[in-house]
Image (cartoon, rainbow, N blue to C red; front, side, top):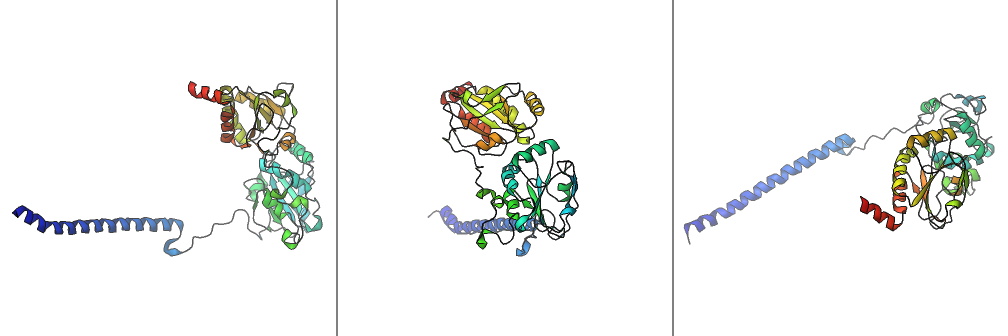
Length: 365
């Protein structure tokens, strides 16, 4: 055997041992770095040493604290105050007429007894916006509860209510009696009189049911459903009806002049509509006619904009929110599930054109 092979045979085991030691050192070093990162992460999360993280402070005012004073005018201009309800439990609801989720709860809100009969709390609505617009909204819905106008949103700020619909129960002594309720279902659950819950063998008053138990359809029309016809005044004069568009594909978009996402949608919808002439876009909007005219001009809208007074056409289409849209086929039937929000609406329009049109659009890009 050559001397080279002998030397190599003697050195190989030591080389293998050295290589193993080096790998072991690298693993230990890497493990140390991982542990250091974990400890740093635990420190940031407040969980070092296995101690539980400190609980987040609840949103809103603490239960048992004194409810901030409310001195506002109602929609008739009469001064009202929270002190007038001392001795009764009140359900304070923060509302915005331009909020789709608020609009969804209007039928249930209208069904609440305004005087707190049967041990139920007295509903008290604090709303923002224009008095005349609010008056139309609540009169159209038949809401009997007192509605106070907080034009500057000062009362909502005092109650740490940063969204709508939200609210609290306030006890007979004027103290906060619940956590901040967020959403219509949570608010309506507070409206149920004590001892009348279904778990006690009794059903709540129809107006106090959560939204998911309401008989009013709010989840949209199913694909294949005949699209309800309507005739509405059109910006610029005249009227428009769905029936007169039979034979064409229609993207029916529900909007509101005071809706922020609707403002984001409008210019993009106009641009895409020009690229998709095979689909007729029609907007059904709410709000003041002049304000809608200004918005349409601002965004350069060329498709029809119709005006509903409140939610009468939205109710037919089973959605009280904006922006939403339905694609309606040439035979007047709902061609796809309702699209909710800017991107889904644009996708619905882009995908709503006939296949040949979509292929031509792709070929032209």
